[in-house]
Each structure stands twice: as C-alpha cells, then as structure tokens.
Picture 1 (spheres, helix red, strand yellow):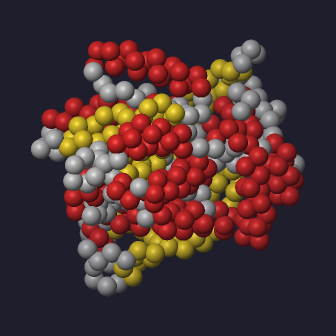
Picture 2 (cartoon, rainbow, N blue to C red):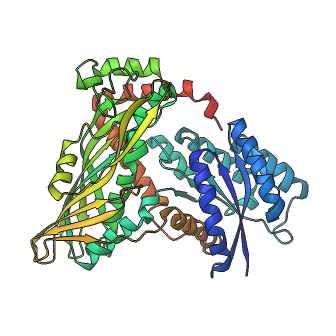
Amino acid sequence: MLRNLNIVCIGIGSQGSRFLKKLEKVKPKLLSGKSKINVQLFGVADKNKKLRSDFSDAYKKYQSYSGSPELIIADTLGDFVTQFLKKNYQQKKPSASTVPIVPILIYDATPTPCHIQNLGIIRDLLYTNKELNNKIFYFGEKPLLTDEDQIKSLKDMNIPFWVDFIELYSSTFLTLVKLINKRSISINRIKTWRVSSIALEKLLLNKRKETMGGALEDKMIHDLALAYGLLSKTINIANNFNLSYEVLKSRILTFMPASINGIIKGTGIFETCIGNKTGALNFDEQLFLSEVLGPAADTSFSFKVKWKLQEQNGQKKFVDTDFCGSWLGLYDFPDLKKLCDDIKENLVNYDYCKFGEKDTKFNSEETRVWAINAHDKENKPVTIICNFLNREGIKPKIVLLHSGKNGRETITVPDEDSIETILNKVIIDCFNFMEYGNYNESLITNGNAYLVHKLMCDAKKKAFENYYDQYCEMKKIQSKFLSYLTP
C-alpha cells in the first residue's frame, strides 16, 4: 500500500538546499522500494526574501513538467503554520473517519537559536489540533539545543524528533564499528581533532557580528555523538549497556577575534596571533569585546571526558577521550601534525582561498581525525587512525597499526552518502512511529540525543567554572543580533 509523507524545509540557505537536493535522490528509492513511501515537498520557509523568490521561480519551472503539487512558501515556520491551517486544514476540518491526514516531516535548517522556538510552534500546533498528534515530525540540524533549559523544554514538549548527526551513518564510522567488533578490539583511549578555518572566512567576509556557535557547537558536537555512538555499539558492552561520563577538564583556548588584523601574514600562509596567544586579552576583556562585537564564539576548544562502562562480564572499564576543535586551523594542535608525520599520511585538507579586493590569500585547513589506543583479543596494543573527512584530494580512511606481521593495515571505506542514508532512515521511522507508537531507538533521537547535548553543555560549563554565570549573561547578548532570525 502506498504511503504519503509531506516535507517542509525551514531555512533554504546552504544547509536547507543540500537537504532538498538529497531529498530528490531518495524519493524514487523510497517509492520503488518495499517501504512504498511517496514523498512530496509541501512547503519551504526562509526570512531571506530573495532566497524565497528565487526558489519560487525555480519550483514553478520544475512544477510545470513534474506535475508536483502547489507549494506553501513562507518567511518563517509560524507563517507556514498560519498558511497551512487556513488553506489545507481549517476550511475543511477533517474527521478521522473521512479525511486522512498526510503526515508532515519538518526539516529545520535555521540557525540553532531558532530551533527551540520552532519546536515551541510545533508544540502549540499539536496542542490546538489534537488530530495532528503523531502526524507532525521534526528533524533538526545539529546542534539542536545549546543549554540545559532547552533540553528540559524539549523533553516536556514530547515531540517526535531526530538530530542531523549525519556522521553516525557515514561509511567511516560504520566500518570502524565493524572492525572493532570483528577483531574484538577493546578501546582504552580516544583523541579527536576537528578543525576548520571558518573563523578566518567570516572575518575576511566581514561577518564577525553574525558569528555564533563556535568550534564546540559547530564542529566538536559531531565527535561527541561519534564517541558515544562508538562506545555504545562496541560489542563487549552493547549487550549489557551501562555508560556514563565525567568531564574532567575543559578549556576555551581562544574566542572569535575582533578583526582580521594581525591574523593572516604572508601570502598563502596561515598563522594566528590573537587573544591569549599574545597575552593581549584577559578573560574579562574578552567578555567585554564579545558584548561590543557581537555574539561570543569559541574558536579553539579542548576538553577531556572519562567514560565509565560496564562490560558483559560485569567488570567496570574506563575510557578517556580528548576532544580538540578549532575554527582557526591547526595552530593549536601540533600533536596532529606530528601524527601525520609519524604515520606518513596526509590527514589535512588544504584549500587555497582568496578574498576581497586586495586578494587576501591563505591556506584554509580542515581535519576530522581520530586516534584510538586499544588492545586486541590477545591483549596486544593496537592504534587505529581514522580520517572522517571526505573532500576533493583527501578521502576517508582507517589505518590500523599493530605489532603483528603486517604491522600496518589500511582498511577500505566504501563510498556511500551518509546524508541520503540518514534521510531515508528518518522518513521510514516516521511511519514506524505512526504504526507502532514508537520509533526504533537510535543515536539521533530521544535519550541518546539528549545525552550528547548535555555533554556539550557540561563541557561549556566546565570550561568556565567560576565564570559560568558571566558566560550565560554573555550568551544573552546574542539576542541583540538575532532579530532577523526570529521564526
């Protein structure tokens, strides 16, 4: 039997556009496969008037030859709901026995501060229209939430949701899990590096005041989800799952700098000299600058977590994880450069960038690297190096180093699209929820998603310790700069 699902995309910038392109790819597979799901784009929303106009024009051309239904185009989720109720719902109030309600999956690609507001709009819609319960679903870009109050609010809303932790469905992660389980490898320690040069790009493009989030919320939350996912899927604990954590230490190395001055030197050479690198700014001065310049954003962050596991045999085991992240390239992490030299592998994507009338140049740097210290079933030490990055010139790979005859193995990672995989799963899960009253518990929803976001909040809290109240005040300053984002 054919089943229908309407899709609404909130935010049609780069992230939303990528989602819509992938949606077009999974539609025929869902329709022709055993799931027999007919997916239709039902509505889009974006505050940017030009984006809406361009999308509307493009969709009309597509509609003329595809026969696709008319689209609701709104500026916010609230506006979409108003149009939806007026046009498709209240004029012909359906009864459960006569008019089937087509379920809706809302993909939220708006900036993170908008997510909790959009979820509140969905909660109110469900409260005033009871027949829509279990018919409206939410799929949000990471991070879904940024503080513990929002986590509590989402729990109270009781809305079916998923988080876009796409790397949990990447070929690299799935191959890593399979490798560890097949060879009965026991993990002792994990170190992660997730680096980009996005801060430099924002400064060069004069977007300092629009900058939110930071290395932790934008980049490192992926590694939190992956680390929790890996430990929870390790075979020697999965059948008797008991996993808790403690943040041992956490440190913000730098904040988003005031300007581009003094950050890039030379031609095509990436260097930094900002904030506490020169001793120029103490903590209170950085707080003040954040208020003057715009939202606070950490550009370099590191923290350590101790995971407590209970294995199948009842024994307790501890795994240390060191998380390192940056928006300012590799400057803070010479140990990663040393790792590349030691294993004679390039794990960094270098992209030569140009900006502005003066043709400013630098080598942007991006990495998504893990080093796992472990031992095999014979209790011999092994090291696993994982590159999660997939870019032109550098592909995902897993390198296994051990003391055996073949002391170095390169594990093949299949070339599969994790975005299509996760989108396919979420769409099928919507129907599992409607038919069975729950969805298959996974690492991108419910308790697991809460834990990853709570860990992110704990890392921020630990980084500030005595300064946490001031930090909360500093984050409130963001509201001054978010009026154009309000859904």
